[in-house]
Image (cartoon, rainbow, N blue to C red; front, side, top):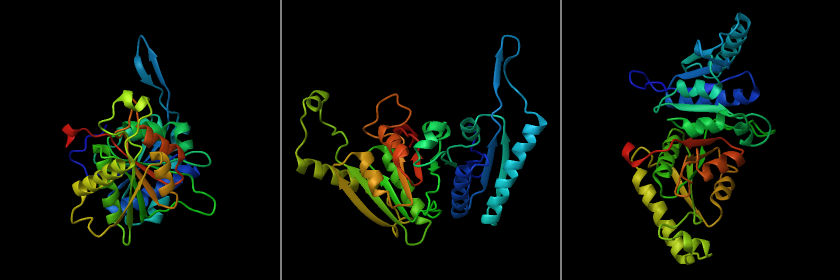
Length: 309
């Protein structure tokens, strides 16, 4: 992974000449302009690796034809970005690795990675490739997965309406902080905070849960209110005071609640893990579910621990 020290943060995106990658590029370019960051456009040649007892692990060098084709794709997409946002500094990088590895190795904790999904329909198709799921699981910085534009509804390039899921965890706190500061860059923006009562309660043992016991409704309502108020108190500051914030508290499944609230939004933001995550999973079940179901761009924040604060 790239060392962040000594360089400015960047928006990093991968291109391959497809319409899906172009959608990700355009979103990334708009985001780079909002942040005042350079845009790093990466094209991966995906050259195979060979392991032998004599030479060890080596990667096949590309032929001149393959390299030239890669350069053409890279420059075409970079020129498209420059035409869209003339004020954005556009950098290019031709990589020999697989796309997920290429983006991981060219981004650091202070960056933002943006990828376009593949195939038709929701973001689920991006995960069938590998870039979306591997990046969201392993990246040290936020990853935005941009879906293929739906017919009659292009991908919104300005996330004025942002939906974010919170459950009281540190990851969801960072997700809310990201959502608020993302909205703060845009005039007349709004953030909808979603908390599901279905999240596990801290005192309920596995035996109680297995027996079908559930806490009283009024307790869940109070707990949800306290969770949302507590997380908002942690992240609110003068830089985001002007953002219009609303709250949705529900007992629906967290994935269903987020996707439903985000159906008409411009961006859904989730933490990579939350209170309900299963230890050892690459991503929490909620973030995976939202990525598989949402039809709008989804931002996944990297997992944080208390020691990283």
